[in-house]
Image (tube, rainbow, N blue to C red):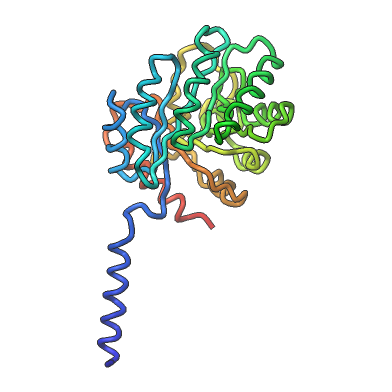
Length: 285
C-alpha cells in the first residue's frame, strides 16, 4: 500500500475512534438536584444530556420517599449513570428513626449508600449507637453507610467523622469529604492535608468553587449565605487544583459531585462547571 494511502487510512481510523468516544468519557462528575425541577425523570435527563454521570437528591421527610423512588425507577435501567441521596437523621424529628430505614431498600436497589447527615444528637454515644445500627442494616442490604460531615450539625468535618468511624469500629462505615464544609471549619488552605489524612475512609467527595478568602470558622450568626464557599467551578478565585491533585495522589477513585446549593439566577453554570472540571483534570499529573 502506498505511503500516502497508509497515512490516509490511519487518519480515518483516528477520526472514527474520536467520533465513537462519548463526549465526556474522561470526565465523570455527578451533580446535586438543587434548583432543578420537581420531576425526577426530567432532572435525570437534563443533567445526563449535559454530560453529568449521576445526580444527588436529598431526603428530609417521609414525603420525599416518592421522589426517591421516582429517581430510582428512572436511573435503574441506565448504564453509567448513578443516583445518590443524602438522608437527614434529626434526633428531634419523630420520623427520623423510620425514615432512614425506609430509604435503604430503595438505595440498595440502585447500589447507592445510605449517606447520612446527623443533627441534634443528645450525646456522642447516641451518634455511635445510631451509626452502628445503620452500618449493620446497610451491610445486610449490600451497601455502605457513609457519613456526611456538614457544618452546624453533629458531625461537621472529615476529622470528626474519622474519629467516630474508629470508635464505632464497623467495617461498613465510611465518610465523605466536602470542600465547602471543610472551608467552614477553617481548613481552606490545608485541604490537601485533609485529603491525605482521610482518603482511606472517604467514599464520596463534593466540590464547589470558592472565594480565595472564603469565610472560615464559626459563623457570626444565622442565615449567612454560602456564596463564598459554594459557587460554580469557574468562579475559581480559590483553585481546587491542589485538592484534586491530592485526591489523585491518594488514589481516590470514588464519585466526585458538584455542589450547587444556593446557586440561582446563573444560567449555564452547570455546563461551565463541567468544562472547568475537565480543565482541572487535564492539569493533574
